[in-house]
Image 1 (spheres, helix red, strand yellow):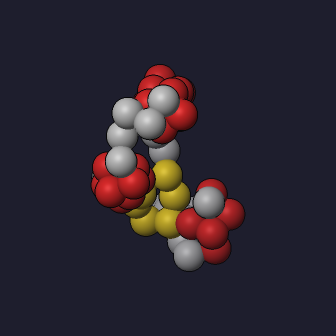
Image 2: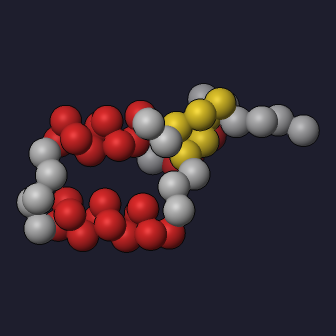
Amino acid sequence: MKLILLENKLDIMPTQDEKYNMMIAASKMEIRFEEIKSWIRSRVSKKNEP
């Protein structure tokens, strides 16, 4: 996913805790697909190019 985002000049920067919590919740089926999509969308932003 990260590579696809970078190719489109986008990036995702969740904290380590956010990534951990999302993966645990997904593996336990505590969240639905729509919630995962929303979580990703809320953390994607345009990549700042130097």
